Length: 505
Image (cartoon, rainbow, N blue to C red):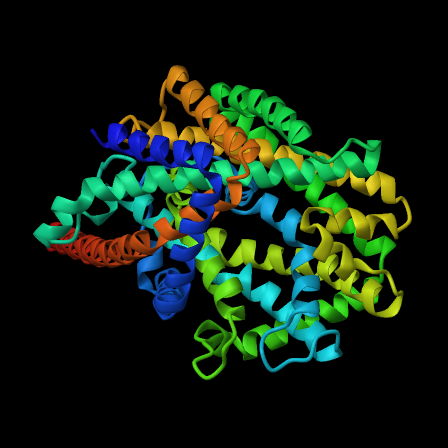
Protein backbone atom coordinates (compact mmCIF):
# COMPACT_ATOMS: atom_id res chain seq x y z
CA UNK A 1 0.00 0.00 0.00
CA UNK A 2 2.82 2.40 0.92
CA UNK A 3 4.54 1.66 -2.38
CA UNK A 4 1.33 2.34 -4.32
CA UNK A 5 0.80 5.67 -2.56
CA UNK A 6 4.44 6.68 -3.09
CA UNK A 7 4.35 5.74 -6.76
CA UNK A 8 1.05 7.59 -7.17
CA UNK A 9 2.46 10.81 -5.69
CA UNK A 10 5.58 10.52 -7.88
CA UNK A 11 3.48 9.89 -11.01
CA UNK A 12 1.23 12.88 -10.33
CA UNK A 13 4.14 15.28 -9.88
CA UNK A 14 5.92 13.91 -12.98
CA UNK A 15 2.78 14.28 -15.10
CA UNK A 16 2.35 17.80 -13.77
CA UNK A 17 5.94 18.59 -14.72
CA UNK A 18 5.53 17.12 -18.19
CA UNK A 19 2.16 18.66 -19.02
CA UNK A 20 2.54 22.04 -17.32
CA UNK A 21 6.16 22.63 -16.23
CA UNK A 22 5.62 26.37 -15.80
CA UNK A 23 2.69 25.73 -13.47
CA UNK A 24 4.70 23.23 -11.38
CA UNK A 25 7.63 25.62 -11.25
CA UNK A 26 5.42 28.50 -10.07
CA UNK A 27 3.55 26.43 -7.49
CA UNK A 28 6.65 24.81 -6.03
CA UNK A 29 8.45 28.17 -6.01
CA UNK A 30 5.63 29.81 -4.06
CA UNK A 31 5.49 26.93 -1.59
CA UNK A 32 9.24 27.05 -1.11
CA UNK A 33 9.16 30.81 -0.49
CA UNK A 34 6.41 30.44 2.12
CA UNK A 35 8.29 27.66 3.91
CA UNK A 36 11.67 29.40 3.99
CA UNK A 37 10.04 32.65 5.13
CA UNK A 38 7.79 31.24 7.86
CA UNK A 39 9.57 28.08 9.01
CA UNK A 40 13.21 29.04 8.64
CA UNK A 41 13.60 29.29 12.41
CA UNK A 42 12.33 25.70 12.76
CA UNK A 43 14.99 24.34 10.40
CA UNK A 44 17.74 26.26 12.22
CA UNK A 45 16.75 24.96 15.66
CA UNK A 46 16.23 21.38 14.49
CA UNK A 47 19.59 21.14 12.73
CA UNK A 48 21.51 22.77 15.59
CA UNK A 49 19.81 20.33 17.96
CA UNK A 50 21.01 17.42 15.82
CA UNK A 51 24.59 18.72 15.94
CA UNK A 52 24.44 18.90 19.73
CA UNK A 53 22.83 15.46 20.00
CA UNK A 54 25.47 13.88 17.75
CA UNK A 55 28.21 15.36 19.94
CA UNK A 56 26.60 14.17 23.17
CA UNK A 57 26.02 10.62 21.92
CA UNK A 58 29.49 10.32 20.41
CA UNK A 59 31.51 11.53 23.38
CA UNK A 60 29.37 10.41 26.32
CA UNK A 61 29.13 7.03 28.08
CA UNK A 62 26.57 5.94 25.47
CA UNK A 63 29.18 5.94 22.70
CA UNK A 64 30.41 2.46 23.64
CA UNK A 65 27.17 0.74 22.60
CA UNK A 66 27.55 -1.35 19.47
CA UNK A 67 25.20 -1.22 16.49
CA UNK A 68 24.50 -4.92 16.59
CA UNK A 69 25.29 -7.85 18.84
CA UNK A 70 28.42 -7.74 20.97
CA UNK A 71 30.19 -10.23 18.70
CA UNK A 72 29.25 -8.46 15.44
CA UNK A 73 32.23 -7.19 13.45
CA UNK A 74 32.12 -4.44 10.78
CA UNK A 75 31.47 -5.75 7.29
CA UNK A 76 33.80 -3.23 5.62
CA UNK A 77 37.19 -1.75 6.43
CA UNK A 78 37.28 1.81 7.76
CA UNK A 79 38.58 3.13 4.42
CA UNK A 80 35.92 1.36 2.34
CA UNK A 81 33.18 2.31 4.79
CA UNK A 82 34.16 5.98 4.79
CA UNK A 83 34.47 6.08 0.99
CA UNK A 84 30.95 4.68 0.55
CA UNK A 85 29.24 6.97 3.05
CA UNK A 86 31.07 10.01 1.68
CA UNK A 87 30.22 9.19 -1.94
CA UNK A 88 26.55 8.66 -1.08
CA UNK A 89 26.36 11.71 1.20
CA UNK A 90 27.62 14.62 -0.86
CA UNK A 91 30.58 13.72 -3.04
CA UNK A 92 29.11 15.10 -6.26
CA UNK A 93 27.95 18.24 -4.45
CA UNK A 94 31.48 19.11 -3.34
CA UNK A 95 32.74 18.93 -6.93
CA UNK A 96 29.78 20.99 -8.16
CA UNK A 97 29.99 23.70 -5.47
CA UNK A 98 33.67 23.59 -4.40
CA UNK A 99 34.52 26.56 -6.63
CA UNK A 100 31.06 27.98 -7.27
CA UNK A 101 29.78 28.57 -3.74
CA UNK A 102 32.66 30.65 -2.33
CA UNK A 103 32.64 32.78 -5.49
CA UNK A 104 28.85 33.19 -5.25
CA UNK A 105 29.13 34.43 -1.67
CA UNK A 106 32.05 36.68 -2.62
CA UNK A 107 29.97 38.36 -5.32
CA UNK A 108 26.72 38.38 -3.29
CA UNK A 109 27.63 38.11 0.42
CA UNK A 110 25.27 38.04 3.41
CA UNK A 111 23.59 41.34 4.35
CA UNK A 112 25.90 43.89 5.94
CA UNK A 113 28.97 42.89 3.91
CA UNK A 114 30.12 44.74 0.79
CA UNK A 115 30.60 42.44 -2.24
CA UNK A 116 34.03 41.98 -3.76
CA UNK A 117 35.94 42.93 -0.60
CA UNK A 118 38.43 41.00 1.57
CA UNK A 119 35.69 40.74 4.21
CA UNK A 120 33.38 39.20 1.60
CA UNK A 121 36.09 36.66 0.69
CA UNK A 122 36.55 35.67 4.33
CA UNK A 123 32.84 35.32 4.99
CA UNK A 124 32.40 33.42 1.71
CA UNK A 125 34.80 30.73 2.88
CA UNK A 126 33.30 30.66 6.37
CA UNK A 127 29.79 30.04 5.04
CA UNK A 128 31.06 27.39 2.63
CA UNK A 129 32.51 25.58 5.67
CA UNK A 130 29.25 26.13 7.53
CA UNK A 131 26.94 24.87 4.79
CA UNK A 132 29.02 21.72 4.17
CA UNK A 133 30.33 21.05 7.67
CA UNK A 134 28.99 19.65 10.93
CA UNK A 135 25.34 20.55 10.36
CA UNK A 136 24.52 18.53 7.21
CA UNK A 137 26.55 15.56 8.38
CA UNK A 138 24.83 15.66 11.78
CA UNK A 139 21.49 15.33 9.95
CA UNK A 140 22.76 12.28 8.07
CA UNK A 141 24.51 10.90 11.13
CA UNK A 142 21.54 11.04 13.52
CA UNK A 143 19.08 9.70 10.92
CA UNK A 144 21.51 6.92 9.98
CA UNK A 145 22.16 6.11 13.64
CA UNK A 146 18.42 5.85 14.30
CA UNK A 147 17.91 3.43 11.45
CA UNK A 148 21.02 1.37 12.23
CA UNK A 149 20.20 1.12 15.94
CA UNK A 150 16.69 -0.23 15.49
CA UNK A 151 17.73 -2.58 12.68
CA UNK A 152 20.80 -4.12 14.24
CA UNK A 153 20.05 -3.97 17.98
CA UNK A 154 16.28 -4.40 17.94
CA UNK A 155 15.91 -6.57 14.83
CA UNK A 156 13.69 -4.05 13.03
CA UNK A 157 13.24 -3.55 9.31
CA UNK A 158 15.12 -1.00 7.19
CA UNK A 159 12.30 1.55 7.19
CA UNK A 160 11.98 5.07 8.54
CA UNK A 161 8.92 4.07 10.57
CA UNK A 162 10.99 1.49 12.45
CA UNK A 163 13.20 4.24 13.84
CA UNK A 164 10.27 5.79 15.75
CA UNK A 165 9.15 2.59 17.47
CA UNK A 166 10.57 3.55 20.88
CA UNK A 167 8.05 6.39 21.15
CA UNK A 168 4.95 5.43 23.17
CA UNK A 169 2.63 7.94 21.50
CA UNK A 170 -0.25 6.33 19.62
CA UNK A 171 -0.50 9.14 17.07
CA UNK A 172 3.10 8.48 15.99
CA UNK A 173 2.44 4.76 15.57
CA UNK A 174 -0.63 5.45 13.45
CA UNK A 175 1.21 7.96 11.27
CA UNK A 176 4.31 5.77 10.77
CA UNK A 177 3.26 4.47 7.30
CA UNK A 178 3.16 8.10 6.16
CA UNK A 179 6.79 8.49 7.24
CA UNK A 180 7.80 5.76 4.77
CA UNK A 181 5.83 7.40 1.96
CA UNK A 182 7.54 10.74 2.59
CA UNK A 183 10.93 9.03 2.61
CA UNK A 184 10.38 7.26 -0.73
CA UNK A 185 9.00 10.37 -2.47
CA UNK A 186 11.76 12.65 -1.16
CA UNK A 187 14.44 10.14 -2.16
CA UNK A 188 13.08 9.54 -5.66
CA UNK A 189 12.70 13.22 -6.48
CA UNK A 190 15.93 14.24 -4.77
CA UNK A 191 17.94 11.69 -6.72
CA UNK A 192 16.16 12.55 -9.99
CA UNK A 193 16.91 16.25 -9.52
CA UNK A 194 20.54 15.46 -8.72
CA UNK A 195 20.84 13.30 -11.81
CA UNK A 196 19.71 16.28 -13.84
CA UNK A 197 22.24 18.58 -12.17
CA UNK A 198 25.03 16.00 -12.45
CA UNK A 199 24.32 15.54 -16.14
CA UNK A 200 24.65 19.29 -16.67
CA UNK A 201 28.10 19.36 -15.04
CA UNK A 202 29.32 16.33 -16.97
CA UNK A 203 28.07 18.08 -20.10
CA UNK A 204 30.06 21.19 -19.12
CA UNK A 205 33.17 19.06 -18.58
CA UNK A 206 32.81 17.39 -21.98
CA UNK A 207 32.32 20.82 -23.50
CA UNK A 208 35.56 22.04 -21.92
CA UNK A 209 37.48 18.95 -23.06
CA UNK A 210 35.99 17.99 -26.42
CA UNK A 211 33.74 20.90 -27.33
CA UNK A 212 30.56 18.85 -26.91
CA UNK A 213 27.61 21.28 -27.21
CA UNK A 214 25.80 22.07 -23.96
CA UNK A 215 22.14 21.21 -24.30
CA UNK A 216 19.33 18.92 -23.28
CA UNK A 217 20.01 16.30 -25.96
CA UNK A 218 23.58 15.80 -24.75
CA UNK A 219 22.43 15.71 -21.14
CA UNK A 220 19.72 13.15 -21.95
CA UNK A 221 22.34 10.89 -23.56
CA UNK A 222 24.57 11.31 -20.49
CA UNK A 223 21.69 10.22 -18.24
CA UNK A 224 21.07 7.15 -20.39
CA UNK A 225 24.74 6.10 -20.33
CA UNK A 226 25.24 6.70 -16.61
CA UNK A 227 21.98 4.88 -15.86
CA UNK A 228 23.34 1.77 -17.52
CA UNK A 229 26.48 2.10 -15.38
CA UNK A 230 24.82 2.69 -12.01
CA UNK A 231 22.14 0.04 -12.53
CA UNK A 232 24.88 -2.42 -13.43
CA UNK A 233 26.81 -1.40 -10.33
CA UNK A 234 23.71 -1.76 -8.14
CA UNK A 235 22.98 -5.24 -9.52
CA UNK A 236 26.52 -6.36 -8.65
CA UNK A 237 25.89 -5.67 -4.95
CA UNK A 238 27.30 -3.41 -2.24
CA UNK A 239 30.38 -5.58 -1.69
CA UNK A 240 31.49 -5.14 -5.28
CA UNK A 241 30.13 -2.24 -7.39
CA UNK A 242 29.42 0.45 -4.80
CA UNK A 243 32.46 -0.43 -2.67
CA UNK A 244 34.91 -0.45 -5.58
CA UNK A 245 33.59 2.67 -7.26
CA UNK A 246 33.55 4.62 -3.98
CA UNK A 247 37.17 3.67 -3.34
CA UNK A 248 38.20 4.75 -6.84
CA UNK A 249 36.37 8.03 -6.30
CA UNK A 250 38.16 8.84 -3.06
CA UNK A 251 41.56 8.22 -4.69
CA UNK A 252 40.67 10.38 -7.71
CA UNK A 253 39.29 13.16 -5.50
CA UNK A 254 42.44 13.11 -3.37
CA UNK A 255 44.71 13.24 -6.40
CA UNK A 256 42.72 16.09 -7.96
CA UNK A 257 42.80 18.13 -4.75
CA UNK A 258 46.55 17.50 -4.35
CA UNK A 259 47.18 18.59 -7.94
CA UNK A 260 45.22 21.83 -7.49
CA UNK A 261 47.06 22.50 -4.22
CA UNK A 262 50.49 22.00 -5.79
CA UNK A 263 49.72 23.83 -9.04
CA UNK A 264 47.90 26.67 -7.29
CA UNK A 265 48.75 29.08 -4.47
CA UNK A 266 49.56 26.40 -1.85
CA UNK A 267 50.55 28.79 0.95
CA UNK A 268 47.41 30.89 0.41
CA UNK A 269 45.29 27.71 0.55
CA UNK A 270 46.85 26.66 3.87
CA UNK A 271 46.35 30.19 5.23
CA UNK A 272 42.73 30.07 4.03
CA UNK A 273 42.10 26.76 5.81
CA UNK A 274 43.66 28.02 9.06
CA UNK A 275 41.86 31.37 9.05
CA UNK A 276 38.49 29.95 8.02
CA UNK A 277 38.57 27.11 10.55
CA UNK A 278 39.16 29.62 13.36
CA UNK A 279 36.38 31.90 12.13
CA UNK A 280 34.02 28.92 11.70
CA UNK A 281 34.58 27.68 15.25
CA UNK A 282 34.25 31.15 16.81
CA UNK A 283 31.08 32.03 14.85
CA UNK A 284 29.44 28.59 14.85
CA UNK A 285 26.52 29.34 17.18
CA UNK A 286 25.77 32.74 15.65
CA UNK A 287 25.70 31.32 12.13
CA UNK A 288 23.60 28.38 13.32
CA UNK A 289 20.81 30.68 14.54
CA UNK A 290 21.20 33.61 12.16
CA UNK A 291 17.99 35.15 10.84
CA UNK A 292 17.37 38.64 9.43
CA UNK A 293 14.16 39.86 11.15
CA UNK A 294 15.03 43.55 10.66
CA UNK A 295 16.21 43.35 7.04
CA UNK A 296 14.27 42.76 3.88
CA UNK A 297 16.84 40.26 2.65
CA UNK A 298 16.42 36.63 1.57
CA UNK A 299 20.08 35.55 1.72
CA UNK A 300 19.71 33.25 4.74
CA UNK A 301 16.59 31.68 3.25
CA UNK A 302 18.14 31.29 -0.19
CA UNK A 303 21.27 29.60 1.16
CA UNK A 304 21.29 28.29 4.74
CA UNK A 305 17.64 27.35 5.15
CA UNK A 306 17.47 25.99 1.60
CA UNK A 307 20.52 23.81 2.32
CA UNK A 308 19.14 22.55 5.63
CA UNK A 309 15.86 21.61 3.94
CA UNK A 310 17.76 19.91 1.12
CA UNK A 311 19.89 17.85 3.50
CA UNK A 312 16.79 16.83 5.47
CA UNK A 313 15.02 15.75 2.28
CA UNK A 314 18.04 13.57 1.44
CA UNK A 315 18.44 12.18 4.96
CA UNK A 316 16.25 9.06 4.54
CA UNK A 317 18.27 8.01 1.49
CA UNK A 318 21.74 8.75 2.90
CA UNK A 319 20.79 7.67 6.43
CA UNK A 320 19.45 4.30 5.32
CA UNK A 321 22.44 3.67 3.07
CA UNK A 322 25.09 4.43 5.71
CA UNK A 323 23.09 2.36 8.20
CA UNK A 324 23.17 -0.53 5.70
CA UNK A 325 26.99 -0.54 5.65
CA UNK A 326 27.63 0.22 9.36
CA UNK A 327 26.63 -2.90 11.28
CA UNK A 328 29.11 -3.83 14.02
CA UNK A 329 30.43 -0.32 14.69
CA UNK A 330 30.02 1.47 18.01
CA UNK A 331 27.91 4.61 18.28
CA UNK A 332 31.08 6.64 18.88
CA UNK A 333 32.84 5.21 15.84
CA UNK A 334 29.71 5.65 13.72
CA UNK A 335 29.20 9.33 14.61
CA UNK A 336 32.88 10.26 14.34
CA UNK A 337 32.97 8.55 10.94
CA UNK A 338 29.73 10.11 9.67
CA UNK A 339 29.96 13.60 11.18
CA UNK A 340 33.45 14.69 12.20
CA UNK A 341 35.64 12.96 9.60
CA UNK A 342 33.68 14.01 6.47
CA UNK A 343 33.40 17.55 7.88
CA UNK A 344 37.19 17.84 8.00
CA UNK A 345 37.49 16.42 4.48
CA UNK A 346 34.93 18.96 3.26
CA UNK A 347 36.87 21.80 4.93
CA UNK A 348 40.06 20.70 3.17
CA UNK A 349 38.22 20.44 -0.17
CA UNK A 350 36.71 23.93 0.01
CA UNK A 351 40.02 25.39 1.17
CA UNK A 352 41.81 23.95 -1.88
CA UNK A 353 39.19 24.69 -4.53
CA UNK A 354 37.41 27.72 -3.06
CA UNK A 355 40.64 29.24 -1.71
CA UNK A 356 42.39 28.80 -5.07
CA UNK A 357 39.43 30.26 -6.98
CA UNK A 358 39.18 33.33 -4.71
CA UNK A 359 42.94 33.91 -4.91
CA UNK A 360 42.81 33.77 -8.71
CA UNK A 361 39.79 36.09 -8.79
CA UNK A 362 41.29 38.67 -6.40
CA UNK A 363 45.01 38.64 -7.19
CA UNK A 364 45.29 37.24 -10.72
CA UNK A 365 42.29 38.97 -12.26
CA UNK A 366 40.73 35.72 -13.54
CA UNK A 367 36.98 36.47 -13.97
CA UNK A 368 35.73 33.35 -12.17
CA UNK A 369 32.87 35.12 -10.36
CA UNK A 370 31.49 36.13 -13.76
CA UNK A 371 31.77 32.52 -14.94
CA UNK A 372 29.77 31.36 -11.89
CA UNK A 373 27.10 33.94 -12.57
CA UNK A 374 26.86 32.80 -16.20
CA UNK A 375 26.68 29.05 -15.48
CA UNK A 376 27.38 27.47 -12.10
CA UNK A 377 28.20 24.08 -13.62
CA UNK A 378 31.16 25.51 -15.58
CA UNK A 379 32.89 27.24 -12.63
CA UNK A 380 35.43 24.54 -11.83
CA UNK A 381 36.38 24.14 -15.51
CA UNK A 382 36.82 27.90 -15.87
CA UNK A 383 39.31 27.75 -12.99
CA UNK A 384 41.17 24.84 -14.57
CA UNK A 385 41.45 26.77 -17.86
CA UNK A 386 43.58 29.34 -16.04
CA UNK A 387 45.87 26.74 -14.42
CA UNK A 388 48.78 24.65 -15.73
CA UNK A 389 47.67 21.26 -17.09
CA UNK A 390 44.12 22.59 -17.17
CA UNK A 391 42.95 20.05 -19.73
CA UNK A 392 44.22 17.13 -17.63
CA UNK A 393 42.50 18.55 -14.53
CA UNK A 394 39.25 18.97 -16.47
CA UNK A 395 39.40 15.34 -17.63
CA UNK A 396 39.98 14.06 -14.08
CA UNK A 397 37.18 16.27 -12.70
CA UNK A 398 34.74 15.07 -15.37
CA UNK A 399 35.57 11.42 -14.64
CA UNK A 400 35.22 12.14 -10.93
CA UNK A 401 31.78 13.70 -11.37
CA UNK A 402 30.71 10.78 -13.56
CA UNK A 403 31.77 8.20 -10.97
CA UNK A 404 30.16 10.17 -8.14
CA UNK A 405 27.08 10.27 -10.35
CA UNK A 406 27.16 6.47 -10.63
CA UNK A 407 27.78 5.87 -6.91
CA UNK A 408 24.91 8.19 -5.97
CA UNK A 409 22.64 6.43 -8.44
CA UNK A 410 23.44 2.88 -7.35
CA UNK A 411 23.16 3.84 -3.66
CA UNK A 412 19.74 5.34 -4.37
CA UNK A 413 18.61 2.23 -6.27
CA UNK A 414 19.60 0.06 -3.31
CA UNK A 415 17.83 2.30 -0.77
CA UNK A 416 14.64 2.66 -2.82
CA UNK A 417 14.63 -1.10 -3.31
CA UNK A 418 14.92 -1.60 0.45
CA UNK A 419 12.16 0.90 1.18
CA UNK A 420 9.78 -0.61 -1.34
CA UNK A 421 10.25 -4.23 -0.19
CA UNK A 422 9.45 -3.73 3.48
CA UNK A 423 13.05 -3.06 4.49
CA UNK A 424 14.73 -6.04 2.77
CA UNK A 425 18.50 -5.30 3.03
CA UNK A 426 19.11 -7.25 -0.20
CA UNK A 427 16.27 -6.37 -2.62
CA UNK A 428 16.03 -8.47 -5.77
CA UNK A 429 17.55 -7.47 -9.08
CA UNK A 430 14.15 -6.80 -10.66
CA UNK A 431 13.31 -4.24 -7.96
CA UNK A 432 16.67 -2.51 -8.41
CA UNK A 433 16.26 -2.47 -12.18
CA UNK A 434 12.77 -0.95 -11.95
CA UNK A 435 13.90 1.82 -9.60
CA UNK A 436 17.00 2.57 -11.69
CA UNK A 437 14.96 2.98 -14.85
CA UNK A 438 12.23 4.91 -13.02
CA UNK A 439 14.39 7.61 -11.42
CA UNK A 440 16.31 8.08 -14.67
CA UNK A 441 13.04 8.42 -16.58
CA UNK A 442 11.86 11.00 -14.06
CA UNK A 443 15.08 12.97 -14.43
CA UNK A 444 15.12 12.82 -18.21
CA UNK A 445 11.45 13.61 -18.80
CA UNK A 446 11.45 16.56 -16.43
CA UNK A 447 14.76 17.88 -17.76
CA UNK A 448 13.41 17.82 -21.30
CA UNK A 449 10.24 19.54 -20.10
CA UNK A 450 12.24 22.13 -18.17
CA UNK A 451 10.91 20.96 -14.81
CA UNK A 452 14.05 19.83 -12.93
CA UNK A 453 14.20 23.06 -10.88
CA UNK A 454 10.53 22.68 -10.01
CA UNK A 455 11.06 19.12 -8.79
CA UNK A 456 14.07 20.26 -6.76
CA UNK A 457 11.86 22.88 -5.13
CA UNK A 458 9.13 20.29 -4.55
CA UNK A 459 11.68 18.04 -2.84
CA UNK A 460 12.52 20.84 -0.43
CA UNK A 461 8.82 21.34 0.30
CA UNK A 462 8.57 17.67 1.32
CA UNK A 463 11.42 18.33 3.77
CA UNK A 464 9.20 20.36 6.12
CA UNK A 465 7.02 17.47 7.32
CA UNK A 466 10.02 15.16 7.22
CA UNK A 467 11.91 17.55 9.53
CA UNK A 468 9.28 16.74 12.16
CA UNK A 469 9.86 13.02 11.47
CA UNK A 470 13.61 13.53 11.99
CA UNK A 471 12.89 15.11 15.38
CA UNK A 472 10.79 12.07 16.33
CA UNK A 473 13.58 9.74 15.17
CA UNK A 474 16.12 11.66 17.27
CA UNK A 475 13.95 11.43 20.39
CA UNK A 476 13.22 7.76 19.75
CA UNK A 477 16.84 6.69 19.30
CA UNK A 478 17.95 8.73 22.34
CA UNK A 479 15.39 6.97 24.55
CA UNK A 480 16.33 3.58 23.10
CA UNK A 481 20.08 4.16 23.55
CA UNK A 482 19.57 5.25 27.14
CA UNK A 483 17.43 2.16 27.83
CA UNK A 484 19.92 -0.26 26.27
CA UNK A 485 22.88 1.31 28.05
CA UNK A 486 21.19 0.91 31.44
CA UNK A 487 20.20 -2.66 30.54
CA UNK A 488 23.81 -3.53 29.70
CA UNK A 489 25.02 -2.01 32.96
CA UNK A 490 22.38 -3.98 34.85
CA UNK A 491 23.47 -7.21 33.16
CA UNK A 492 27.11 -6.45 33.95
CA UNK A 493 26.30 -5.85 37.61
CA UNK A 494 24.29 -9.06 37.75
CA UNK A 495 27.16 -11.01 36.18
CA UNK A 496 29.65 -9.50 38.62
CA UNK A 497 27.36 -10.43 41.52
CA UNK A 498 27.17 -14.05 40.34
CA UNK A 499 30.96 -14.21 39.88
CA UNK A 500 31.48 -12.92 43.43
CA UNK A 501 29.09 -15.52 44.77
CA UNK A 502 30.94 -18.30 42.96
CA UNK A 503 34.28 -17.08 44.35
CA UNK A 504 33.08 -16.97 47.96
CA UNK A 505 34.74 -19.63 50.12
